[in-house]
Image (cartoon, rainbow, N blue to C red; front, top):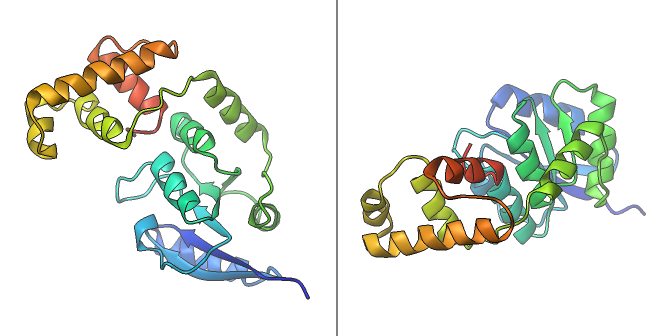
Length: 208
């Protein structure tokens, strides 16, 4: 007897979620057990695969969402209408198995779900290009706190406002920024200016 795969959808457009549910109902041995508008609103039930919209209204990044779902033991398939190359690259770098366009024919989505639910990579030329581009960018290995500081500082916040928001001193923020710049420099990605930091944050999916 074939073991059914348990999948979930993270999609914040209700009509799209309804259409997805109707489509998945046609797939043998695939059970849609949850649907939510954000990753942190999914129930804690065990999941084999999460089909994830690339851009969500809660402001979360693809990289953070893929990492959170991997921590739960779920594979991730990106399902999107977005054209943002950097967001796609960040999802690829985070370890998603592939991407399917919302405009794709239903059979293409069904095949992708079947493949990804078993842990298989969903190949497309667009996804291959994203993986190649992501591989060209050295991983700076930022900690969660460093990424948090970078997100605010690169978006234009002053060191003082970052310090107030995070409950740390201005000097500590300055230390974080120095460390962030050094880490990027060590992997061949210059980050000497705030504009550079903004670009690095965009490339890594820390900022949209």
